[in-house]
Image (cartoon, rainbow, N blue to C red; front, side):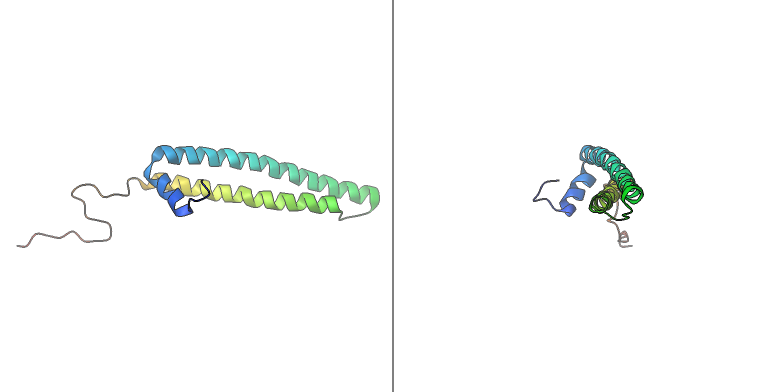
Length: 116
């Protein structure tokens, strides 16, 4: 996503072009996987640091355990946002062609019948 591009333009482009949608979906899945591993790493570090400080120094909360916990929470929120983006991009793929075909009435209107 470019800096000057809004989310509306981002999803409009994904809705209109299936190759762009596939590329965005692939990038979101890869990014979610990478951030998921970072979440796991910070979770393990937070538990390890808290346990180590508690057993060795009788300190339950240390600066490093707080830092690892905050990193875990921030990365988990990022992981969740990538999950939302994947769900949106997959649902766009299920919509099909948003433009009515020839001879079809526009969505939300009743077809006009010729005068009798």
